[in-house]
Image: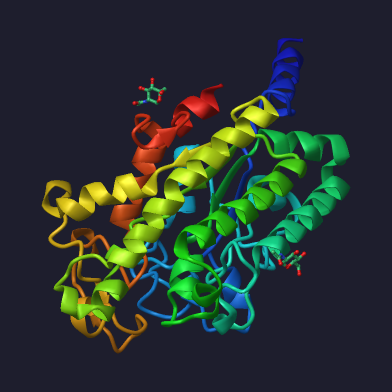
Length: 358
Ligand SMILES: *[C@@H]1O[C@H](CO)[C@@H](O)[C@H](O)[C@H]1NC(C)=O
Ligand SMILES: *[C@@H]1O[C@H](CO)[C@@H](O)[C@H](O)[C@H]1NC(C)=O
């Protein structure tokens, strides 16, 4: 009798309602958050050969643009998920693994369709959202439509896009098509109005909590320092101006759509502020430099691609930048710490830990 009761109790405990399901996590955007979609595409924007991934748990390249973990990996870890969402194009993303979320990001893309045209075949923003719709149909077949809607509305979404619209479009070459068409302030207004459409489409797809990262200090990347060696290691003024125009307008647009929706669905992360802290006093944060990339060649190790033939620093913990554009895992960790627990200097209207506790 007792044994029957105990096994009944065990069966009850093990069957469903008590098991806490992890929160699904969806990622959209560019190389800062791509975890390997571009491995499956014919494109030059890829990070699937050594030394990328040199400090990843497997010590292998995965398509992440870092020496180790990227921002989605670290957020996923922080919210208690067992594994970060797989790239949407990965054949391993099927069955119950879909319930963990998916990463739709693709290196090289921007807010505008013409950004990153030189990379040939990449998943542009609208296509990422089309895939998200397709994803929801696949999950609906697995767990029903209402449960899919609940999964999506309770999920966390991260979107990181916009840097390439400057670096790989407006400022890609002198007299670029976009720079002949628009003054910088007008171009920024165009980006913000197009970005608003993207965020509203995302909202219409049923998401309830979206973390939106602003543009970092674009002009301080080793690639930019290498391009304008005459400025002696000072950040590129035009790209810094671009970010300083863009970031406040992004924040304003996010506040506006939250007001319109009547809920704080969108949360803005001020990456510029976070990075500027450790760019201006790298030693305070345990870095030896914020100007020289760990992997690369030429001035500031900021020219060309990071390949097996590049100069590679022995200790990645000491560098802010892994390659000419992308942060090291160490820098990513500092950014994610601010996202989670930062004050309103960094996070608006609130940090991620308060947002997820709601
Ligand atoms: C970008 O491309 C998509 C799909 O081709 C299209 O629906 C969208 O209107 C385009 N956006 C702009 C601003 O041209
Ligand atoms: C997160 O933000 C909330 C609300 O602004 C703040 O009260 C809290 O102190 C922040 N968390 C940490 C750990 O600082």
